[in-house]
Length: 292
Image (cartoon, rainbow, N blue to C red):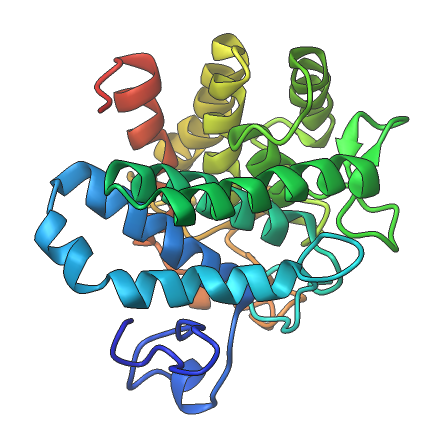
């Protein structure tokens, strides 16, 4: 990640060497933000200050990439590439990207503060505050009690709303409660059908939603979603007796992303995809309370 970081812009690579994405020079704004969040999580869970100090210049350049993206009159980051987790319609002042940027800024601001770097901590915290204000002004859909996917659409995505709820983008607890309730409109008998990838249930984004309901003080809703989706993954004869399917169609078949790159070929769907393990951290940290 650091070795292939762009030394001019600070952007992290979308994927590692020997992948088609890397060799095609594909880039992702959302994966860049996920990298920053992962850096914070690694630092907190390991306490490896030597590693953080050694890579601090790389980390600050990574944050600079986010700050440059926010340096506009709207106060939101314009998603410059379509590369993301496989969803459709990426681009624009995307709610998922900006929620990720917000969390990266707030967490790394707290890390900078703990490392006695008050100027950076203040700069990053102020940028996060401006982003949050713009997020609610530009993206909140009062009628739906959900955030819009970007500033030019009426689509209310699962990813942007789950991430916003998890990372505390709503301005009030009442707004958070309304958003949590509104997300259940996507649920069918086996899980949430994601609006940004039609006819698909994504355990990845649904795992984020589980964490989001817990963050909003809705444990019954979160556990209901775990039982609904991961219970199906565990017991359905179409699965393998585990809960690691990459995704599934809305009808429970393995035709994940059938019309969006996977050619309606269920053999292409991974049955050992770690991004489907969201309930593990949700149950361990938010239910059992094993959290630093």
